[in-house]
Length: 114
Length: 115
Image (cartoon, rainbow over all chains, first blue to last red):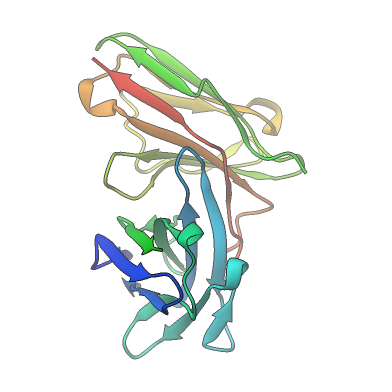
């Protein structure tokens, strides 16, 4: 069965510092991994995805994520955080043996302090 | 490009009442999803349509929830009768297809409060 874990409920970082939001997953087959962001009173927005190929994936708003197969992780990163990055971040996974279902993590709230 | 439209944005009902939510996906998107997001949790897939056919409804409480997507475009999700534990945000999303590598586009959601 598929599962996703986001071990931190909240991440606090100062503006200008690098940020990391952690995600680990468990699937039976090959993983397809996604990051979404949710701003207050808005729907989820797609940030980036890993399908195959290069382990470092670049996405919207300067975010990137690193796929690590041995550690079954897909951590979201940004070299320099902005106050406007403060939001709720969700990691999601599908696998090619689990049908069409996408499983979302519980979310990590990112707070960037000026 | 217009996004996924949902209505209403907010709904308050008493338990045992019925409620319906409407979703209009992005034009041309064959796949439509309904998710339930309970406060403090990630979205949980309720039902997924490919055109007007259901491809996954394994987590839909079929004794009280129903959904349809007539003509393969817009969709309605209904709850009858509602329970207190149905209080959540109901998110509609769409994508171009159901392939594994396709991301979804989400609407703003409908916040349901059951009292």
